[in-house]
Length: 63
Image (tube, rainbow, N blue to C red; front, side, top):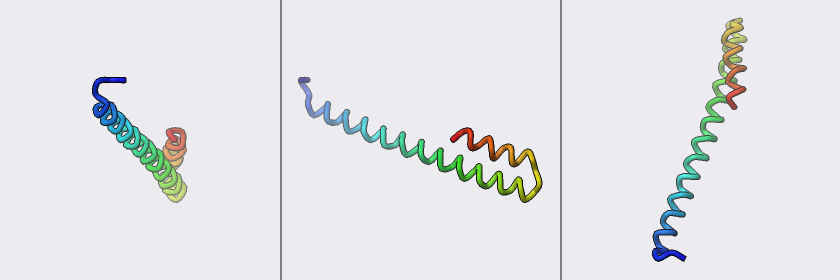
């Protein structure tokens, strides 16, 4: 037991808040990469661009 139980609770709350923020950022990054891949592949197919399709497929690797 520590001498400052309120500090322990406060630190645990900060840790939980930071963990939730990190998870939200990770999920936002995954969502962004999926959208990027879909848009790039669709645009590449519409334009007949192998480079753009390849860029879109590369985005799926980042997921």
